[in-house]
View 1 (cartoon, rainbow, N blue to C red):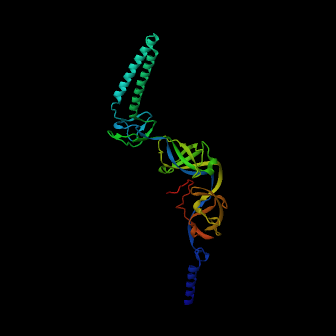
View 2: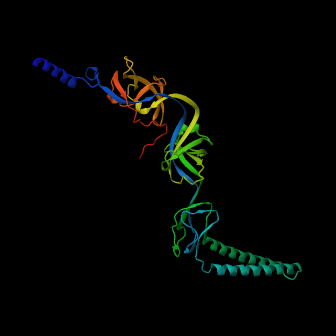
View 3: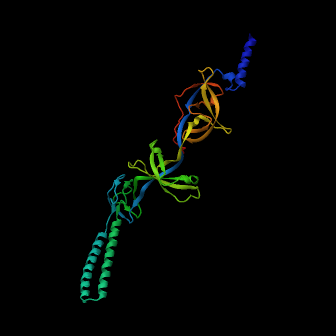
Length: 362
């Protein structure tokens, strides 16, 4: 009896020490829990993903061309304004007085010129005197226009319609030429600029539709079209700068946002697709685990099958050969499987199987 017990202990130790968990001799009675997915039929177009930045249709930093004290501020931070709206003014000193003086002198010169012109026609004055009067009048007109231009330089107006940024000045503050007052951005439409490798130059053309997503708005998609293609390749990166235009009536998109640009081109093609997690990628070939009914017709068992993979979309991959539509494949739990392993399916938690492209987070 003691010898029989020792023999059983030796056999169990031998199974644990010398046989792998995949060995049917040791694990043929165990059931492995896995998640599964069904090979589906999908129609895909050739696509290309690029990363870019959103750029305002028009955008600028507003500043005065001359120096002076801020006397008036007529806007609020974040305000929507139309072209020509007065935003701020600098204090006027003797400019208005000089303007009135030059305008009065120009008016007097005009009267003298008109009178002497009539006198010249009556041969009462010389041609030289009339010419001198005309030049004096034009000179004073020029001085008045120059003074008016200086006054205009102390009035800041919106050059186009858009949304203002945060106010950077205060009343009574002294400003030098070029000091930032506020930013102005025209947000509708808005551009997205992105780079395309030179080997994709053949797919580019004006009007090519693009689909844009931004991190700030999750799965929301924004449609647009390619409106400009730089006619040269960057020598350092061997890429082409492309600009697409997007409608932005709600001003949802903002300049400077990171954008993921998705381009589709070519004719649609049909593929058998499965989740990427179902494929085991190796140097000697790609394989999947297929779940089928066992010989008893009840128990599910796993078989390893070689496949040929194709292009991928997000978390799904196309199977070119080796897997028909409707085949059930293991999408999670492959590491504990072996040929003819008994399996139990638990699909409560499924791996992500979206076709959306997910850029790597920095």
